[in-house]
Length: 103
Image (tube, rainbow, N blue to C red; front, side, top):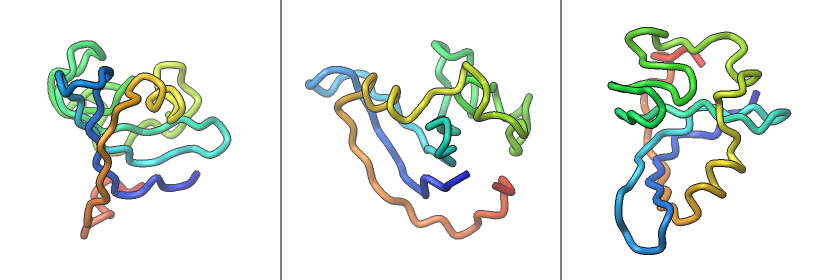
């Protein structure tokens, strides 16, 4: 497993700024290209609070994602994210405490 890094991403589907999706890619599995994505409430993906896309709300799954998260069909690949949200703004974030999620 390789780390994507502390990257903040804001994505939208059209060239005009409209509805934006803000998320933090936490880790990327190099073999499957699956990305563990932490995001805010997003009812399209059954999140009504902060959670991992395809896995559920943090209050239900906890900070530690399932051990086999990169094998699940519900978890998106980085390629899928990039093709779905072709107009993205990305910024590296300075993260001081990586220990919180134990990843």
